[in-house]
Structures are given as C-alpha cells and as structure tokens.
Image: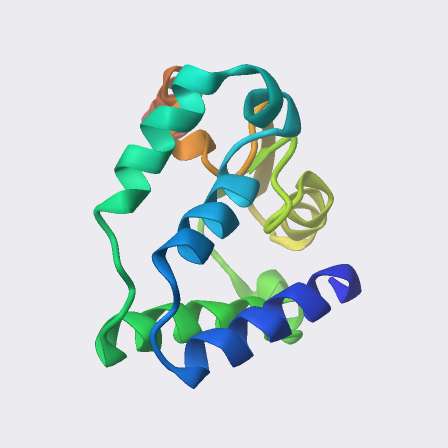
Length: 147
C-alpha cells in the first residue's frame, strides 16, 4: 500500500486543482489498464483504449469529485480491519499485473474473510474487466452458482 501513496496523492492534488488535460487522463488510464507488454507491443489494443478513453473528459466538478472519491477510498488504510467482519461468501478476483489492486492485496483480503475465496487472472492489468472478460465471466458465474 505504501508504494501506491505517492502516485495517488499526486492524482488527488491534480484532480482537486481543476480540469485535467485529456491527454493526462488518457495516459494515466492506459498505464493502469494495460500491461507493459500490451502497451509496448499491441498498437491496435492501445488505439482501442485511446478511443474508449477519449469519450471521457473528467472536466466537471462532479466528474472530478467522483474520481477524488475513488482516490480517497484507495488511500483508506482501514480496509483490512473490516475484512474479517464480512459474513457472506466473497470472491476476490485479482489481475496479475494490476498496479492499483495487486494480487497480493486480494490474496490477503480473501484469507481473512470468513468465507473469502481468491482467484487470480493471469496476464492482465487493471483493465482486465474488459480485456479478460472471457476469464472473469466464468469465474464469477461459477462462484454465484455455488452460492
């Protein structure tokens, strides 16, 4: 968690200061959404993500407020204290190359939840909700079928 504090604090300061340049928003999201290999070698995928992200400006107070709330949540160090009190079955999915929510944290969270289960999706970064949908969907459906 400590390694995430400086970049998240910088993001908080930037988004709190006013409108954020579209180019920064796109670059920051690309760096988190895709793996280094995808960014380096897959021009078509990067182009698709640039197109996807270009439709979002994040230049209104409401948009920035939403982003700031997300950052504050990620900076909250008390999450771990609440995990053991979760009394329902939980599937914690982590993506192998996710810099925002790395597998190590997901593994720890699932281990202290009374009914926690951990699953890691290999080869994907934070954008795996989109890029790994063929792996995530079945894992979630299987979990729901069991519970």
